[in-house]
Length: 310
Image (tube, rainbow, N blue to C red; front, side):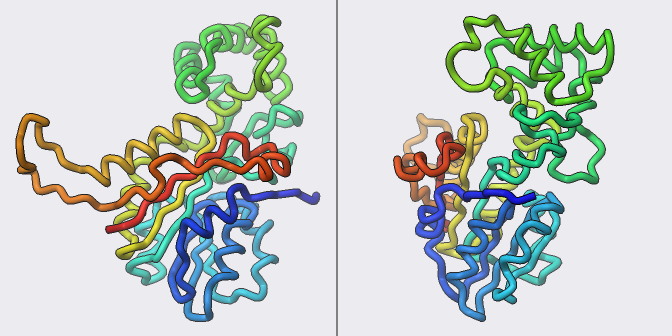
């Protein structure tokens, strides 16, 4: 199958990394390889790129494009394990790293993966096919209250409680096995008038289940701190998010690392001695241009935040 993968905010990422030709860079979310390839093209023979993804297919899909760039390490792992990844490569510090926290086009377009509400497939949604937890287990074995909590918190879905009720009722009749079965349940749970405007009615629920299956938000805050720890001075971390929960975590973590003082506000001088680790380069997130939005509708919710190590 052919995939039309377009990496978002490509020029903004390259500008934001401020690439040194002989630097060591990491792409924590290789995906379709678009960002990684652009970084590799900027590197001299002395530079290195560490291309990380927990999805085996990301490596299969992307590797062929890097034939002329020998200084690329392909690592099947999760970016949250950046310490062990770099330790195993005997790399102390890196000059920059990117995270693109969206689902890659080839994951959405591959009907067998179960990520998309537009393709009928078994409920799966695993980034790492070796892990045990799948969307099937979440939908069929989580309690109704837990499902409602996940759909509301991770999907910001106003109809979360009703959707969870409908899922629980339907699975008492028979297991919910496919994406289209789940889509039909979601549509039946949301009143017709509420489905007339806005995104696909299943979008928020599918997003929330995917986040739960892959534990995407649980690792993010600590991963940011760990990555900053492995950056050299003036090294940069660029993060693209696609929904408000991720963006809020990135924004607040950057703020905490830029201003780590824990002293009570009434103290005239800082007494905790906590020092700033980063400078936030993007006071407001960078969003796609109108031109990019016209070419790639999947970029419409993308936000890029950049921090520099002090």
